[in-house]
Length: 160
Image (cartoon, rainbow, N blue to C red):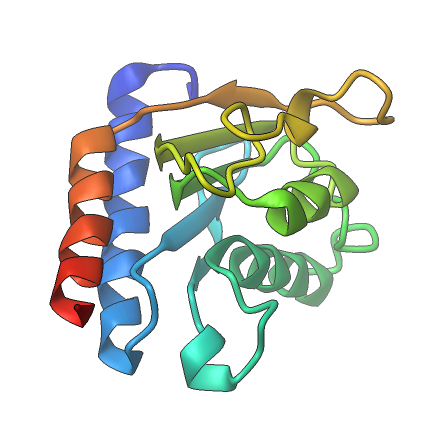
């Protein structure tokens, strides 16, 4: 299901909606969703570094926390293992987020725009597919890439 391009594009629409919501607090517009194997949205997140004053409040981290809390509340195992889930995010994950994805055991990541300065999913680093680690992630890059990149470039142009 998640390997289907139209499904990836539809899920990226949800991540883009989260990114748009980040603008309300002056945060960089990056959004993420985590979906379960049945396609149900288990967690959502957006950048909240400015809103929370928390340098770790990246969209991916917030979505992972949300999904884990939801699974714990539902009594699903220990809640922190997000096996069989997919993370969809508007920007290529950074090193911190890539590490969190691996630790959460997320097997698939779909992302929109490449991050040529800090990306850790194939551009600057490739942590998600590092063979020396104990968990590897299937990566689907460039989904609605132009739209995701445009949202970010428009944000930074307005800041100047």
